[in-house]
Structures are given as C-alpha cells and as structure tokens.
Image 1 (tube, rainbow, N blue to C red):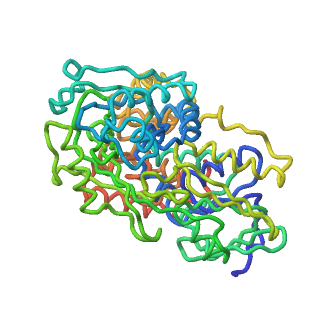
Image 2 (cartoon, rainbow, N blue to C red):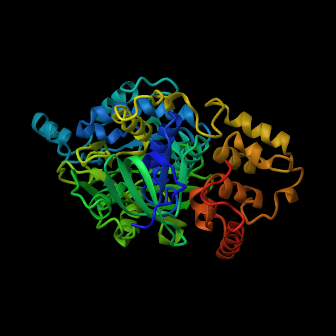
Image 3 (cartoon, rainbow, N blue to C red):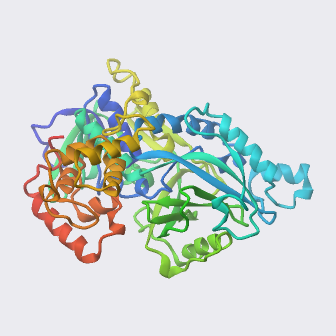
Length: 534
C-alpha cells in the first residue's frame, strides 16, 4: 500500500460508491455525528442512480409477484420523500388504458394461481384485477398527500385523444416523479454540509483490515495514491458490489446479484395534458411514457440480462425496436428512430434469489454485515431508489453496537438542501423568484426552482440583469449556475453539469457543450477539489 497520509483522520465510516445508496448512507451517518468519507470512482450518480425511470413509486406490478412488503414499504416512503424534496420530486398522475386484447403475464405467481382457479381468463389481465391491484396500491401505504384511483372514459378525456380508438376506458392513479441524479447530488451535498468528505473521481484500489481499522487505498483523478483509515467500511457500489468484495477486499462474496439492463428513449413531447401513461404489453410487461422536462416524453424501461458491470450500459437495437413497437400499439401517431433525442441505460443490481426472469427478480435489498475478521464491513445487495432512505437508515441501525453514542434516526423529517418549503409551494416559489429577479422569465424560474428549490435565489443573489450572471452557455445555463454546480455539487465536466446536475444536454448543441467543457476545465484549477466550502 502507498504511504499513509499522516494528516488524515480516522473516519468512523468509509463509504465506497457515490450512487443513491452510498450518498444516502453518508448523509444519514453524518447527521448522527459520525465522521464519514465517501469515494466515487466517477461522478456522483454516474451509473445506475441516474438511469432510473425517474419515479418514487411503490411498484404496482410487484403486487403480481406478491411482493406485498416491498410495495407497502415503498408506498409509505413515497410521501416521506415527497415532503423532503418538493423541488426535485412532485406528484404525477398515471393513466393505465384498458383493452380486451391486453394479456396477463403467464410467468407471474398471480397468473399461475388464476390460471388454475379461473382458466377462462386465457392469459388476459382483466380490468377487475387491475382495479383490485389499484385498490391495494391506494391503501397499503397510508396515503395522505396523493389522490386515489379514479376511472376515465377515454372518449371524453383529453388523455384519450392521442390513443388509438380501441382504448375506451382507463384507470388513473398517483405516484411521484423525481430527478434521480439530483437526488444523489443533494444527498452528497447535505452530507458534506454536515462534515462528510466527498471524493469524486477517486477509485478505491484496495482495502485491508488491520485489527480494528480498515486501511483503504484510493487513487484520484491525477493518479495520486492516498491511504485512509476507517473503523467501518461500507460497500455501496451497486453493480460492482461483488467485484469490490473479490478484487478490492480479496474475499468471497456472501451473496449474489443479478445484473439487469434497463433502457429508455427520450422523444419530443407526445401529449400535452401533463399526465403520464402506464402501458401494458402483450408480453405481460409494462412501460411508462412520462412527461419529461416540458418538451419531451420519456419512454421505458426494458429489462434484459447484462454482462459484467464494466461492460458499457448502452441500449441495443432490439431494445429500441421493442420500445418503439410497444408504444406503437397505443398511440395514434407512431414514433420512429429519427424521433429519438437521446437514450440512456442503467445496470440494476438485483438481489439474486434464483428468480426465473429479470422481470420477476426482487427489487428489495439485502444487507450483509461481516465483522468476524476484525473491523466490520457492510455490503449492500440490491435495492430501489424509492427505498434508498430506509436502506440508509437500516444500514446505520446495524452499526449501532459499534457507535453507541451516535445520534438517533433523523432523515424522515429533514428536507434536502433547497427543499425547505411546502409540497404545494412550488408555484409560489417560482412566482417569488420572478418578482425578486424580474429579468428571468417564468420558464427559467420553473427550471431553477425544480432543480434548486430555495437555493435558486442564492444562485441569483445580487444579480440585477442577465449580464450579472456571466455568459449564457445555452438553454439559460449561466456561469453563475455552473460555478454553483462546481463549488457546491461536485461537478467537474460538461457531462456532469448538463446531464446529471441538469438535463440541458437535451437543448445544447455540440459546439456549446465543447465551450462549456473548456470553460469548466479552466475553472477547475481555481477550485479546491474535493474539499469545497459548501
């Protein structure tokens, strides 16, 4: 191992992985008074955590697999999260169209039972079954903020105008959408504000137990090696959890994960009514079509087995065909490859319980604590974005014997940075921003509030005209905002700023992206990475 940095402290926790679980754990632990370091080999949310379907949801379809506990846990958590982050999460109504030719997935446990009891179903997912599932969905989680399910006549409702004429009825229910990458970034920011050391572009080379401490060797973006010491090691690396155990810790993984690729396409806006669609396929799968950043529609996801975690997660031609064919069975106006603005794919590390298909594999998580060899290590297997906070709270709870003086559970009632306003206060915040800074228009105010919440006013503070914000890189992205991303949100590259801190890459051209990247590179020398004043 490289020589130890004599000036480094002994951390209580060292977290490997800057995805939603790792950053959630770092935030929770820091808020209890524990000293925390986190190392992420790339950017925050640079893998799975920025490639979700952007939902806080219970997982309606998991009811077919009798994952009642998981669904209930996620439904309870859905509204907790909404109140924590009303700037980056918001309620969303979903329309589930009904048609007699929709077939029930014959692979699900529910279908096997129904096939015996009611063989006349012949594989179809009937409307009454969907309504029953939605009844449980409405009541399992003690819903308070979100409206319940209603029935729609698609011949009279605007939601039916874009659908093919065979769809006459639908159910409409509630879930929440979230900016997943900003969720991760804000958890990291909150952890840093509470004292955590967040290290991006920093890879863990290896980790070794020496008595009651872990010695963790890291390599930063410049190639410099540093040894950190910690009392507890947390392996929250998602798809890389087994690789870290075997290649970095030189141990045998106690559990296995199943790597599944989920891919999405983004196309120009398909409908104007503001609600989303949850579409059933004849293969039993379901696909979302969700309003996305005002001018676009997000469509996904697929579920296909994926190779080793270092294999790039990219959508295949077959997956593109699948999603295009899927929505072609619903909407009157077809979409084609030329309509696709962007695609993205993520590798989901599903806890492997021996399920027969990717669709039926559990979305729940398993935590494995190992302390027989001295200093403890905790591995996170699986999980889903909606339950990240509960996962983090459970992780820290498992470490209570090692840190008897740490603080109590706290994250359920603490908002993320910028989220200190009511769930229904977004419109008021947008209007107030326009009054305080009259040189920005309503669209720009909406984008800033939905990214930064009450911190939007801090970014604009003191500006009286657009020139006070510096140059506009395109899409309303100013120098002032980019510096905020770099100083407060750990952004280093144009991709960090335009895809994970915002989605302005959907609006900037290649030349604008290049100019931004060059400007950010020039600024980096003037910033203290990774220890910024937050």
